[in-house]
Length: 180
Length: 180
DNA sequence: ACCTGAACACCGTTCAAGT
DNA sequence: ACCTGAACACCGTTCAAGT
Image (cartoon, rainbow over all chains, first blue to last red; front, side, top):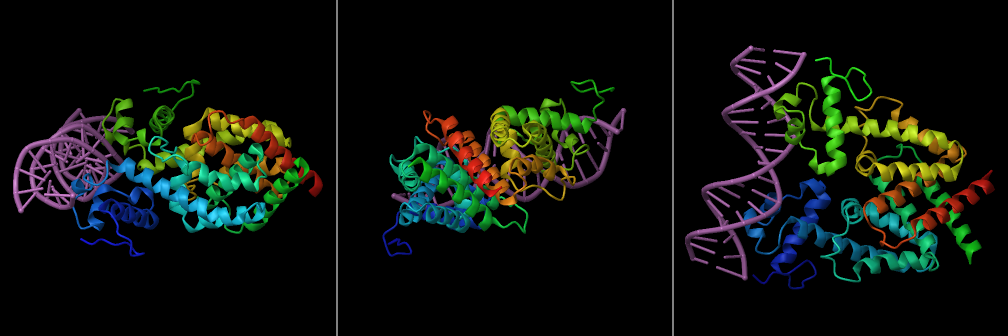
């Protein structure tokens, strides 16, 4: 009963549910996350989950929140370097493809999301864009689009994506310099 | 049984199934497309669908194919005008959000997709990018990303997306001019 | 506080059978 | 050629009941 997480911190049953959900998500994709499989992974029956969690939507919303926090952390070190920011964005999304998909594709459950989380993930992008909202949205769209298409396997196997990224970032950097 | 479509052309039972699927998709989103509801819309029981279609994956693949053909058609008139191309891309995706989602997000079922369809949709983008593959991928990533985030409701309600698009396209245009 | 079995309204799909 | 009911292995969720 002294439930402890990997880092030794005390962990609620609810956190254990979310941890298991995150593992199943990364192993088998979004449709692998079923209440019955999740229960199974915890050695319990599906109805028991509802004592710790409202339902499946809440689980997905909680994972979205985790993803946003992790993204914010991963982007922060890039500072105001546009290229470093792009590299960090792509690296995180490639390392956590399912979680990235969950966090970026579905509408945020803004009711459920604690305030500030969304902004924290957006802030590094805005900063790398020199505080210009249009530039920030262009940068975000570009990074999201390239990563989403790459994760979906939509580019030819022999496509030189590093070159595409370099081209795109170069274009935005020039535009930003001219704007300043 | 002289089944005819909206344009008067003779239509196979299979096409009727796909038409109904497309309607359900656009009305209720991807998860509304169930074999039972689809059958219902056709006045038939679910098992009957399997006489006209292998299964649900084939239906989705067929809709993806339709989407790619429509996108190719929608983009063609833009010629080599980058801004016109971006406008056409965004307009189509906004007018057919569910179909766009279906066509862009999931891995293409390349086994099932007739050869040339994917290329036909990509060609106008490559052309607008002046034949430069890196520029084309940057343009595609940018357009897809902005549209995907917009359709997912990820921008603030008061965001000036026209301005973001203008900024992004301006950046790519300058880069393209310098490259030439 | 935590877990259970039984049940409900759903899924996609198969199959033997009917016209 | 086209459709059917019954069935199977799944879903998410509720609820009364047990410790």
